Image (tube, rainbow, N blue to C red; front, top):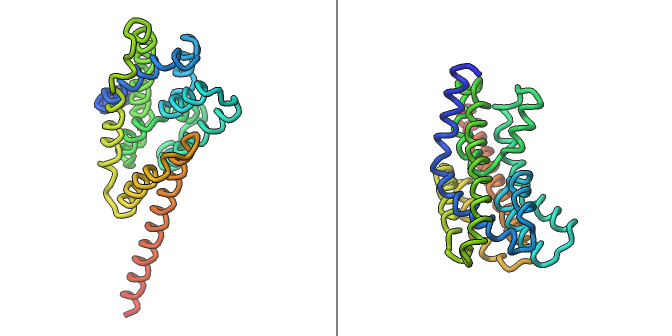
Length: 243
């Protein structure tokens, strides 16, 4: 690793620290809920090691606790993580030149927090060290998630009822911190507002499908608004050149 790569790696980890603070209570709660939902301590730790997707892990726990068939659990968590496909498309210009082993590694460690940090480093001048910056952020998040899951498993055995302390509010605040700085255009504002309203409206749908539907609908609305805006801008430019 060159000096520039190491610098980018450290910056990625450092810039992720505020988001890590919000994820700490979330990871601890997952660790406490795992055994309480019917998973063994080992299975709880392995889920964090091999899945590494907070929202999907919590949904899977809820489905495990209700005796949902394994096939449906896999299908639901797959759909929940489809948002990562949009993240990947966004990051593609900065990673398409990398070898396959790098891209596979980055895909596994892709999270909401790392995406929010990495997307700010997509300018062409940062492209040569982008993957090291990304890796610094991803490893910081991954290490934190494993440690917090372990703490949660341990605390759940020694501190009864810790999952009821309301620690999960920290993750909601973290996601607000991720989303709000990204709202810089009208389509993005439309996406945020519609996702919020529709998720509340469809909250009672079974197996959290209302949340998934709200996310998809919000993205479609935002893309439609952006496409219409681009067409309008193009027609105005064409009209001005004609005159």
